[in-house]
Length: 131
Image (cartoon, rainbow, N blue to C red; front, side, top):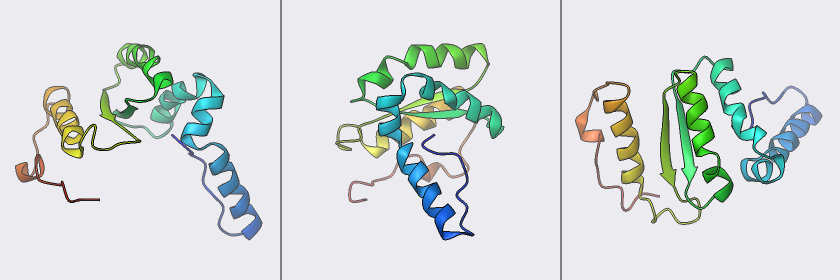
């Protein structure tokens, strides 16, 4: 959701312009100065790319995002779009470990999507030394 336009790499000036636009629309900058409308664009992107589901990374420290969760969930429900909330902490990844993020997604895949893993050993593993 930070940027969905392709960057033309054929011409140096066009490429730089594309990178500048990407930076201008970076997630937090756009979120902080763009109002709630840009958060609802995820449904346009869902349709544009013919997605099967929406994975929403919910930063627990972002009050603006928290205020939108109900509206986003209601719209997904109205449109019958499977939506999974994955909690994380952008500032301190220790607050919500990666294993908890995987568990949230795995629970969604089991209960909502009715799927089973191809390799159950990948459901839970020690990544404490990962970076």
